[in-house]
Length: 523
Image (tube, rainbow, N blue to C red; front, top):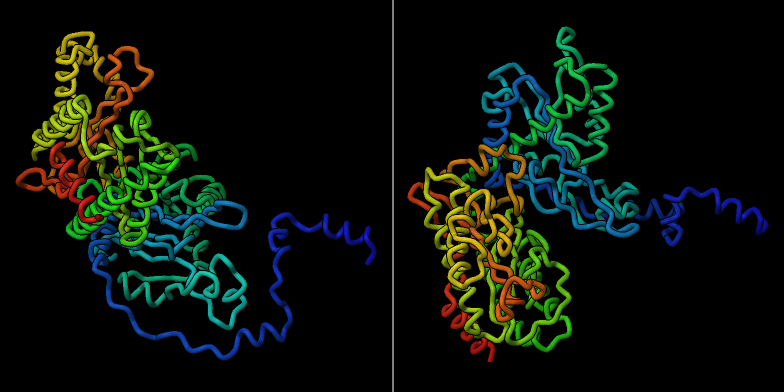
């Protein structure tokens, strides 16, 4: 072959194939035959049923009751490319994890389908039969075993078999090759026995396309609505799945406690790392790295990107760049959470004096925020509204700002809907639900979230703050560059709120003593 022919053939090679140009894997029949031989048989031990299995079944039944006669499609989601041919660590969509009980990273592309059946004949006497569709482990006699870098056991380790998942979850399983038929069969008008579909959209583009194609091919869904209206009905499924998570079951509460306990240890790790952080050009990265190590050691991942913000960076609400210095005399705002292997996450914030001791003005601001947090906690009683927590906390902040001469109007005018001047220094909400997502239940209706009644089984944060930026000319210079937030994870019980993160010191003097104790142990 001459140079011109080589150039032409190279140009004709599809772009998606060129990523393999660096590969030197043999392709001979002899190699393939040898690779397929002399492997020990896979273990045949049937796993025990997961502790979450019955809880997940109850969740599926609750959703089944809301959508009789409708096929429900809940994807886990695909792998996502980080760079060229490397992927981010996989995390399934939270609705999928909630209804199956599956966490970790071994079910990309999986889909849960709840198939409608005659009322009372489904799972646990419900309206649906559930099935999990996924790609099981390829046999060692297949090329996928050693040739597929995304799913081959040689590359990523073993994957559960269909039988293993079925035993663990008490959930029927099927090969993903059967998925297309399972999603698209019998979609059509009711007079011809058609079935309506509801889909959790924008999780997996391929599944969105399958459902859309089925709807286009049948022209109309059973409700005889146009496709835009069908998309709106899909949103009702996402809404219902989000609202289902407003109340945590016993298993979920234990997972939250596990995540919180690991997070508390991570905060101690950060204090141990502070002496090094104070000497490093990017001390915030030292802080971030110390917490991340704990998250990976004891959990699955971070529940969200760590905020390790020192000095004026602490006044940036979502400072995740974490490339600044940590200076003695400044405050370090650490907002971080460990995500357990079940995917439930903690979300805790503490504001620490970098050198172990608060200055007078730092202590004044800190104690105002702590008073606000305590007021929010006191307001968080069964039967109160979720929004009452915010109102109680921000009223305290308005009072302190007025005492310091920073508020340009009276407290009454500031906390009125027409005022809100105090929110210049506390612009975010005081609470959010917490669980599989750090901002859990985000698709729930307003009347069940902000206007919802605090009920046993809810888990949420209380996190007031004050943020005085260096650039803020509306305040005296002594306050500038101080950002304080205190955040705890709260479980609502029949008897009132319980602070799951109370093991981390909250009072200024206790924070100082805790830090000093860690430093002494390190010496």
